[in-house]
Image (cartoon, rainbow, N blue to C red; front, side):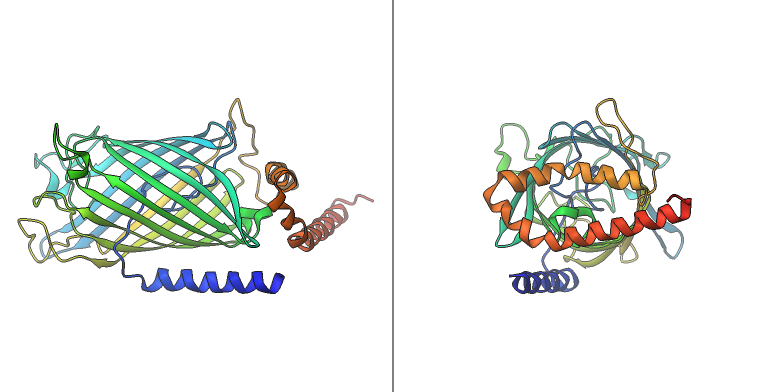
Length: 375
């Protein structure tokens, strides 16, 4: 049984890496989202009830041309709150957006603030396929036009209406007892309606996209290494004067540094792998890129304690108290293992891992006693 499981994992990892490296399908994903997720790909795992996550997002691009430097920058903040075990609420506000060629007034080259996202994530639903552990969730989001300027050059297309997006999220965890400390693969697939067809017109005549994201995460105690593939495929294109109406593919390698239990820093680079032939009218001059060839992303994530949920925000990730708290948070998983018949399989599958972790913890405790001089 363990050999079969190990073989499945190996095949899955190889397949995911192959897709990430050579994918040729136009694809896309959610941006500037908070809670548990990466730069673009989101997880079906939710924050604990009462927990709060705050993220500061930044994204920038610059390119030297013949007579000037073309640049684009975006800054945003997101707030996510664990409402129940299976529901999480999110709000993202884009605080700053460069306008560049999009500026209607040459003296106003930035927009403060830009648009607002409202998100509801329903997730934390475990299921198994054979001996393999997965989680499922759905992310619903609305984007409200709170900025004045739309159709922003070098940015994904956004209409002047209220846009709706729904994403299906499925994640595979190689170790269900330690989801965030073991290899994981995450997949998002969704639908985006730009709601730009006009009054008294069917919503299905509006610009529409299929949304896609795929990621593989390899965690260590202090760092998470990940690779994402994302983009969008227009099933109904926007008007010809829109800047970003071409399909594209992006690759995003990233690194997350866990400074404290509740504070982390993420650095990632979006690399343009493919863009569709120019569809906008008029066509931009040859020296101007249709999409940026790269973008740098930075995220600071902060998980403070709230009235409803206390956590050791500034404890180090290897603090013994922090480790005990992590074990308490996994109590719900053990309850599922006991209550659900299919979960009983994990008792045998993970027994050796549990024993190994316990032995390691006992060795660390003994070493700590020796350092403190405790008999």
